[in-house]
Amino acid sequence: MKKLALSIAALVVSAGTSLADPVEGIWKTQPGDTGGYLHVAVSKCGDAICGVIRKAYKQGGVVSEGYEHLGKRMLWDMQAKGDGSYSGGKIWAPDRNKTYKSKMSLSGNTLKVSGCVAVICRSQNWTRVK
Image (cartoon, rainbow, N blue to C red; front, side, top):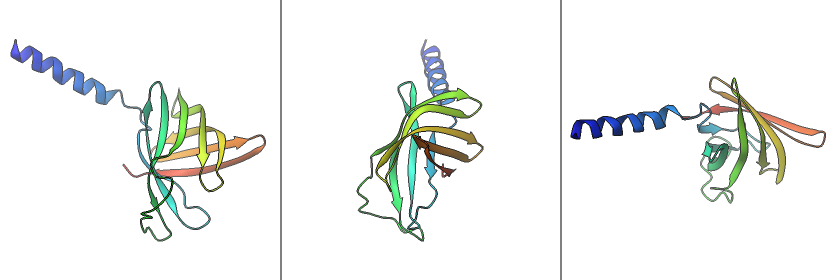
């Protein structure tokens, strides 16, 4: 009976890890106008994909200790569409303090993130950190 319980527990744990979305992980944004960049933790939040700012870096890779937006949600409500495509969500751009309708496309260790407000669109290629 003990072996059966351990086997079931092992299956439950392995099933949970196999259900992870391929986009989950830590992503490095492209450097902004000042050369700084962010690390964004992308993970499931309910039935959607969300991203939270985990670290900020100044130009040259120096950690920005007092960055005011640490822990702030940057992506939310992204829905997987298959083949590495995500849409239906929002992205907040800290450099302009604007929220855009967003979509993402995953290809290997590159995540193309784009967002639009009316006809004004922006996009970046993020690189997987882990």
